[in-house]
Image (cartoon, rainbow, N blue to C red):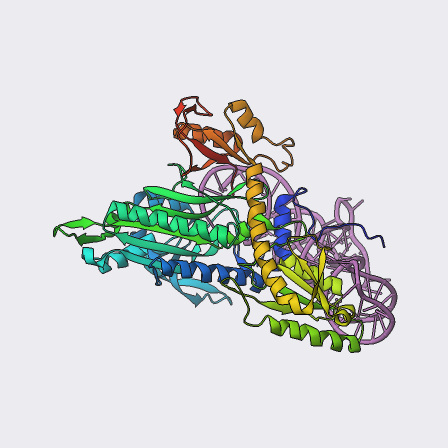
Length: 507
RNA sequence: CGGGAUGUAGCGCAGUCCGGUUAGCGCGCUCGGUUCGGGACCGAGAAGUCGGAGGUUCGAAUCCUCUCAUCCCGACCA
């Protein structure tokens, strides 16, 4: 058989990005679609990534003074109705509970019974139900700030779903805070956006752009919505986290009032912020390649696959003894704040089968150890940030230090690579013809990877935003915080503009 | 909710137009053997009643009616 180069994932990113994404998830065994419409089953390798995300973020929330709590999954319809924009924003995607029990229908089936006097909405987000509690908890300025976080599941009845990116039920974290003043609430909103940005870059190795959402894209009921936007390898944008300044809207709707320092009653100022299992989608699309998942060491469920190579029972015994020694050497070892985990894989499969298994799962390092290595007192180490064939012989005595250092390098390489990719695919555009050309694929039937982030002037008029969206499916991803003052003309209508915003196609 | 398509073994599919013995193929799985440092090979085997209901017929995966579900394209979206 000819040993021609082939990729572990087919099709490749270039051939069919959307299909490649599904295949990476399948090959890495992260998740699968469930029998339940739009819902996914998150499998151990995928769930472990989520647990790592939870662990790290939870620590960050604690450090910033937040405490975890839990609120009901059901929201009475009347609560939901209190904030008008909020209702409008979520009404079309709510699962509603209308009955409380099932009865035998006499034909071997079941029928709905016990109709509720007031239907319950399965939370699509918890502002309204949490607001009811907050109204009780907050009476005085001395009760503030109130800094709460909830880890929960959410249901949004989306029309079209994609594993991790958009599922009917998803897991997330939602922070909800109450403050005495506008300034303090705004400060909180931006502080948590910073936490998200730091997490994305330091742990997920995904560079993000912090900015504000336009009026058309902001959270229903929010005064301002801020976001972190990242670029995927098909050059589309993915909103990876949001933080909302809710003003007094929800405080008024829920009656969150307190007596201030002057003894007067006033409505509080609230915020909410969240990230979801979508981050796993971001992780996949930001780093993975045509050989499967690629995981930054700081978020990987496990870091090193140890692969013994042997032909018979005698060699197995010989090699396994060393493999167990290596495994033991990593016990209780940390790379920065991350515990290093290993996977000793001596399954009865060919070594290449086991090798590819771990490549596809995105494990950062692989240690191969065979009879030749045992004889020479060394092992072969392969890194996920290099070609699958690239292997380095490392003496047994230096394996741990080599690996710990390599993990750090790999983490840094992924971030640098993602930064470079984003830089290469970000352009400043001033003429509308260039803008349309940039976002128009060569092949309309089967669009190739095209476009990217376009920094262009925008007048702030929603009509221009809508027109571009209708024409090109391109939206204003955000008005970046770091956008410099610059006089220019709106890319769409030509009116005066003072800042460039980021336009892109998005998920 | 509009437009299009599909439901046959765990997965991917053929067979359906032109009804006819025991419903096939690839992958996967199980067992045995040879292999094993770049995705192995040979042999044997298990597994489906054809989305569901009804009808036509001597006979239905195949024809008819109804129904359910899923997928793709639009509007929505963390």
